[in-house]
Length: 183
Image (cartoon, rainbow, N blue to C red):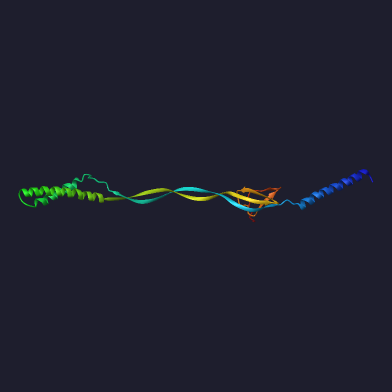
């Protein structure tokens, strides 16, 4: 047999054995297609938002007064008191009664007008506003504990991966899968 033929056969046999060994190793030690999800914990924060709440309320206040000094009530009371006082007695007693009636009538008229002014109320509708706050939880992401082969790891993802995380070339694929709907 020719020496070069023998070398070619040995080299070929060695190459076939090596390729077969590598292929057999990959079949026996196949890389996992998915990592198993052990736990998923949502990461949240509480967000406070404000909004204004307004409502109409009735506000009661004293009506504006035109006669602050109550001159009309005093004058009318004095005239009526003087007329009544003039009806009593005679001579100088009548004069004294007229003056006393005018003084008492003026005092009473002043207080009657004051009471009327105090009880004269106006109601006005005004808008009253206040700021209220609402709290809501916002999900920032998910802390995922996974197992890939015999190793365990942790990663933060922007979505809940479910039960498995796809693996390619020994690395996690962390982008969300696009759902394809059949036509």
